[in-house]
View: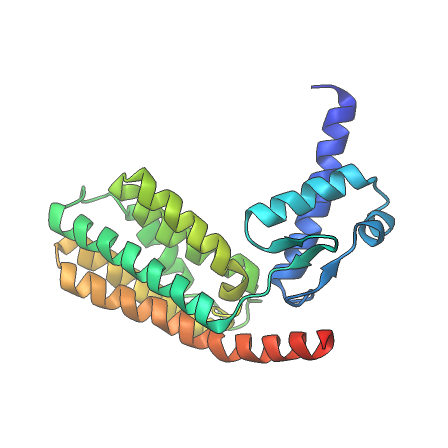
Length: 231
């Protein structure tokens, strides 16, 4: 790869990360128009890396393209997102049930258990980053799914997670919420390892729907704000 290609990729990655962070942190509300010329001017780059960054954001469902208008931050409805939560629950319920029924090696989740024991003891004085914690939470569920070894389910779950990612940053937003989520995660792992599929599914459902209820009110407020600004 030539130096020019590497430099372009580096610029594209920089723009992508900056825009992704703004969308995930809700600095850019749903419906926000991402104008190429303004992005080029702000980051002092050409249109090529900007278009590459916007294309990547579109692929992970944070941005949508509109004919003769350009790119905007993806605008979801509450009903659409509820359907994705239902799909996520269906996929993950099958995963934990199957793993509990068929069994996994005793030490299969040891690193994951250790990680979430540490999260459970998260200090009150520590700074909580919604984006950082949402990614750790997402990784927990993906790691369990990987243990099943079903690539189609894993691919679908990754896609669902990408669509819900901007919401999950509103879920884990306090030390208390981290402890609750950590205890739920540890209970899911314990149920799988003990072969208790019903407890694994019940705890998983509680974990997912606790997160869902935490973000619904925030989503409604954000959507109202976004729609009022675009009216």
